[in-house]
Amino acid sequence: MKKGLAFITAAALVFAGTACAGKSSGESLREPVIDEYGKHVITVGLLGGYMTSAFSDQFFPDDISVEFKYYSKLAENDDQYATKAMALLRSDLISGQAPDIIMLAPSCMANLIHLGVMADMYPLMDACEDGIHREDFLPNVLEGFDVDGELPALANLWFINTAAVKTKFLGKEFESWTPEQAMQAFADMPEGMKFCQCTDEYSLMQYMTRQVQHGCVDPVRNVCNFTGSDFEELLRFSAENNPDEFERESWEAASDEEAMALEMDAAYAGLNDTYLVNMIRIAGFNDSLAHSTFAFFGGEDITFVGYPSSDGCGAYTSVNEMYGISRDCPDKETAWRVVSFLTNYRKVEDKYVHADTGLNVTKAHLDRDFNRSADYGSSINRTVGVWTDQNVVITEEYKQMLYDYILRVKFDPYNDYRIANMIDEETAYVVSGEHSPGQCADILQGRVEIYLSERE
Image (cartoon, rainbow, N blue to C red; front, side, top):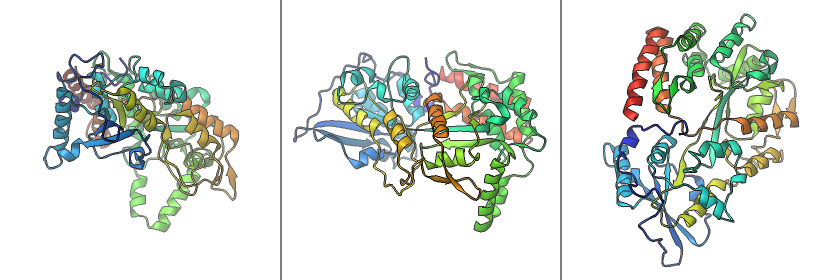
């Protein structure tokens, strides 16, 4: 089973033992709904209030009518509305009245997938001539959505959180480095260099531990090991190299003019090699990516070291909402047309509006952004400042390097962030000096073991 999908969180327990019994074949007991105008009616169920702009723009084919059911709004007068909303969705699942398309946050979607609620969309994709096809996706993204050879859910936008080092310090072989490589690399750096730019007292610890669960937790066998010396050494390194004073305090007390000076200092620090590691969020193949890489590093070659991980999972990736077709849907072919539209949707952007909405999951959109003319406000081909006396245009070689990296990133939209939150909570006590690395490891071992046993 794919990492992340063995997880049954509190939300999933609401569904336990009730989901789609006897319907693993995908057969529905309902008949397709046709309205008075001859349109195919497709219902979309949302647990929260988020709705992708594709819905609000209403560009669906003329023969389809989309109706929405907001479970949270149905339960908003209840003190425990989130639990009540889940219960309402559960009731529809039990009664065979599930929405045709379900939109959920990734962790909740993972629960439904684990319980067999979602239909496999691969057969629909392969049979539909005018919809989106496998070759249209970025290959690493499609691989990430895949669960045991099925396609139970999709999203049309995704984000990459990573970090980079100037290649002259490490070489290309350190891409997606391990915690051990990160600690040794810093030990080999010139005296006085800081590891990373810390915006608060937890930045370094969270950077070092963000992906630690990939090495400490086995989501298939539901076991974990935080008490080994390797994890404790990572905590010790982070605590010892945490700065005594934090830039956040300076920013909070600064005037607008002082804040601008601090921003300039931070940019110069990146160029002047004060920090080894610089964080990067890729929310679009646009001018922001050019600034955070090419401009910030002065056009020098970089290595994407990512967040330290023992299994090469360097960057951590995310999506906002996921959507898929329920096995109860009686008109899966029409539902797939809606899903296909959502997946391939890209809001028309005014050329003067800057947008950091995320990376599309399709290659055509990435290629469009790659080649977009410089007069678009979000074009990666715009002139960018490098904090010198001149502005420059990103080189084709550098732009291709960024493009290739996006295609190499290991995409995992089903990450269990409950474990990540536990790690953040407990390692904060190491930063504050309240717990030793060994005590933190013991506490985490106990907490995660309990969580895994309840999940199993």
